[in-house]
Length: 72
Figure (cartoon, rainbow, N blue to C red):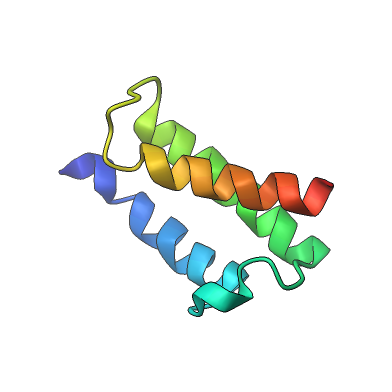
């Protein structure tokens, strides 16, 4: 359970970065959003590590998609 403690702030940051509405996810990410997502991704990687079956592995995929969207 201790693995999830650092994740709680990351989830809050993710919600702040992309909003609570699923329709806003790809509307327009700012550079600030992007930097926040990169920090969140780093936090997630620290928690999930190499465990592809980790419950948060799909969140890593979502954050990665958002980062790629901004970079494109």
